[in-house]
Amino acid sequence: MTSWKSTDDVLHIIAQEEWHDDARIIGTVEGLIRLRNAIQAALDAPNETQKATVMTNDGEGFFALVRCVSADYADDIPCGYTADCAKDKRECPEWFND
Image 1 (cartoon, one colour):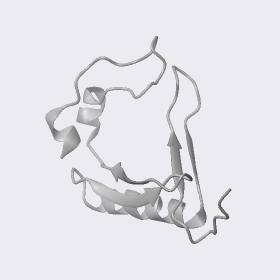
Image 2 (cartoon, rainbow, N blue to C red; image 1 turned 180 degrees about the vertical axis):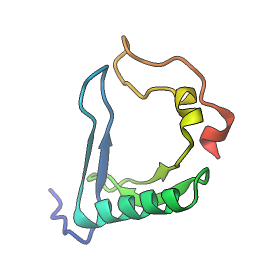
Image 3 (cartoon, rainbow, N blue to C red; image 1 turned 90 degrees about the vertical axis):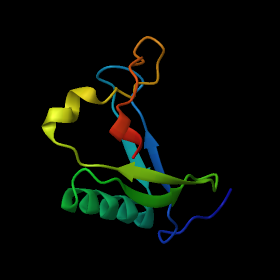
């Protein structure tokens, strides 16, 4: 087991399995600060994707991507449920991966 410090950028984003389940964002102080900074940058620059460089507790790094969109686009975003009975089969909109 690794001994993580609050200065390590560990972040877990655990999706809802199905409707009405809780989603979880769990991390070290540094991981959560990086996510907060990406959220603030997205709020300051709508329609631009911002990145938080973080890692899971197995040491694998990833980008947590954050984007602020207008309410007009809210229905275009597929739901990220993970259970087979709740998976959203819609394609992501073109702008989703910008």
